[in-house]
Image 1: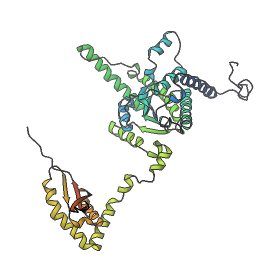
Image 2: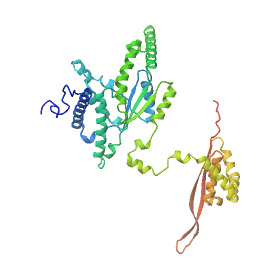
Image 3: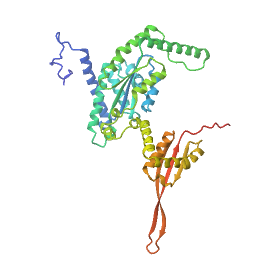
Image 4: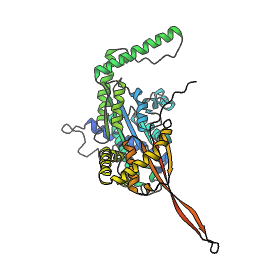
Length: 411
C-alpha cells in the first residue's frame, strides 16, 4: 500500500493548473484519516460494544468576556447535568501532552480528538457533557460530524441487542454566547483591571491568592485580536454545524438575569427532540399538562353554571354538605393548610356530586381530592355453613389543601 491516499494519484482532484486542489478538501480528507485512526485505537482498546458516548453533548462557544465560565454552572443546572464541563484546553495540559510538547512535538488534531473521545467514554459523562472550546478548527468540525454518524451507526447496530439501552438517541446542542466586539473588549479590560487590582492588594497585604493575569486583558489591541480570532475560528467552526445539530444563539449582551432567561428559553425540554422516536410515539397519545390546563378556567366556569342551571337541587345539596360538614373542619386547619375528612354521606354516591364538590373547591381557591374506600363489614354469621354475610361500607376520604397561615415563632 502506498503512502498516497487511495484514488489521489489519478482522480479528478489531482492538483493541476486548471484544477487546483482546495485547502478545504485537504482538511476534510485529513479529518477522515485522523478520525479513522483514533476510532481504530478506541475499538482496539475498549471494544466496539463498549463505545458508549454521552447521549447529550453541548458544544459551548463564546466570545471573550461573554460569560462562559459564569454561565456554565447554570447551563448544567438547566440540563440536569452533574459532571464538570470538559475544558479542551485543560485536557491538553496533562502529563502525556506535556511530554509531547517537551520532546519538541506538537499537540495536533489527532491528539486532541483522541484524548477527547477517550474522555467522553468515562462513565460519569454517560447522560451528557459540556464541551468547552471544541470544535475550534475545520478538521475538528469534520471529526464532530464523523463522531455523530458513528453514534447513529452504533445505535442502529445494537438496537435489537442487549446493549440497546447503552446506545441512546444522540442529542447535540451548539451553544453560542455572543457579544459584539465593543462589549467583548470592554469586559476583557474590566476583568484585567479587577484582577490586577486584586493581585496588587494580595502582594501588599499577603492575604489571599494571586489570580492569573492575561496579557490580552490589559491591552486593548490584544483584546481586539482575541475577539477577531474567536470570530474567524470558533464562531465560524460552530456556525458550520448549525444545519446538522440544534443551534442556540444566546444573546449575552445584557445583564446576568437576562442572559440566563435566554438560556432557559433555548434549552427548555423538548420531548420530540430528546426521546427515542419509538418512546415519543408511545407517550404521544397522552396529552401534556399544558394542554389540559390551557382552557381549564373557562371549562370550570362552564361546568359550575351548568350545575346551577340544570342540576340545581343536586348542586345545592352538595353546597349544603360542604358548608355543614367540611368547612368547619377546614377552618380548624387554617394554619397547616391541609384538612382530611372521612364521610359516609350518601350524597357523594353520585360521581356527578363528587365532580361538583371538587369544582366548587377549585373555584374557591382550594385543591380538593376524593378517594372512595369500600370496606366489607360483617352483618351475620351462619353457624351451620360458616358463611359470613357482609355489607359494603363506603367511606369517602376527602383531602382539602390550601395555603396555610404563616405564624412567626419567637425564640
